[in-house]
Image (tube, rainbow, N blue to C red; front, side, top):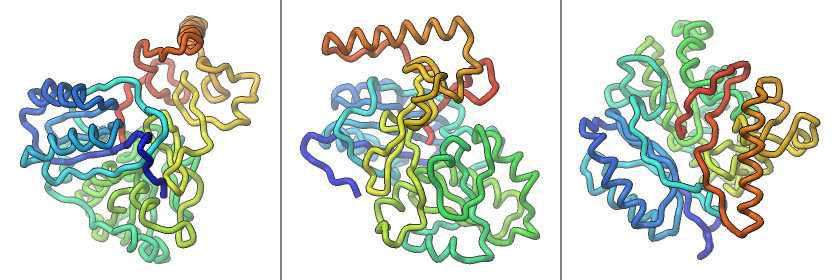
Length: 327
């Protein structure tokens, strides 16, 4: 497990499903608290709750968490922490959304029904059960760099694809015991709620997600293989919750390896083997100019903020969809 030093940034991934009818009114004071505390990151507010990741000093993160938990509706806020030597975010954003994690199915309400929680200490025995179907609810690019041994990969490009995958591949009669997991736990709040609503009787999910499991379970006892994708500049973390071995393509925002960067289709800040074929001349020129400004700012000893990075691209799409912090 990663240990905090005085110079480290505290990275807190948080969420809470709860009715926030006045969620739009929370945005201005929340932004003000974050600014005063020197906190950066992205938080999503919706009628169904809050979700996001923030980073900053120990005192700053504590200030924001304390402020949120003063609201009785958010007192049971769930959050997980890790540490990083450099700031993983360049700006602070609070976004108003229809959902804090987008599934796109009406009437899925984790506050009304949800699967059974398995703590990290209970998880190994659960997924070792041969009668249990273990499903990774994350997207394909996340699963590609690490997952639990033997887990099913639905090969989804977006969490919106998950309900259709369930309809086409799962059966409450045949699949009598299902266990699901995701990065921090939030996707599984919705995926288990959905399965329960579809008649699946014995549905479980990993409490606290992969990040909590990596924090609590020694590597010698772990069923985790590879690294865990995270939604900040670290790209991925290893079992000790330290920055992993992957970099990121800042055109399509997917994880890339050193081998990817050796490809003729890789140009820093512009393209990688995954997105090169979808790159138009206009986008190439825009990304090249952006990378030029990044390098000029670095040469001056400054940090180039610029506009927000492009949304994560689904393979084969010419228009980039918006992407939340998801978790």
